[in-house]
Every structure is written in structure tokens, then in C-alpha cells.
Image (cartoon, rainbow, N blue to C red; front, side):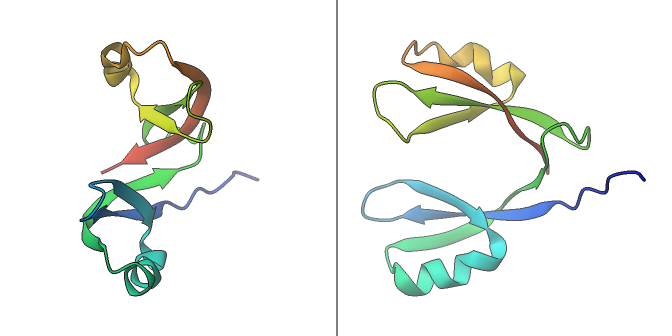
Length: 98
């Protein structure tokens, strides 16, 4: 039986106090806005597909070895811009479609 991949709709929100961006599953954004008034919803970010689904652009994950729990996500073209040796490649994270 062929495996079916359903995309997850992700949206972005910006923290107006810390100037950070949060990317969440769209269905969770309303709860986050209610509980965190500093976050302002922006728009649709992208659709996420499972790693290896071949339905979108592959996105790799890089872990910051200096700050545990922080990550950088990049497609192949963006990886050349990384240039930060503190980020270690952690493999394919997911695929995206816009």
C-alpha cells in the first residue's frame, strides 16, 4: 500500500517584545495568541511534508552546539549562507511547499 502524506499548514507569529518568530501548526496559533499577547499572527508560512515524501523542497536541520535546544533550518541553497561553524548538520527535517 502506498504511503499518503498530508501537509501540515504552518503559520508565523512575531513576538513584538523580543523580536523572535514562532512557526506553529495553524490550528494552534489561536491558543498561542490568547495565552501570549506579545505574539502577533503574520500569515501562512508554508506547508510541511514528511521527510522523504518527495512532495516538497527538502529542509535540513542544523543544531547550535553552543546553545542547546536551538536550531537553524535551511534548504540546500541557503546552507551555503550558514557559514556558522557552531551549527552542526542534524539531517533532513522535513519538506516544504508554498
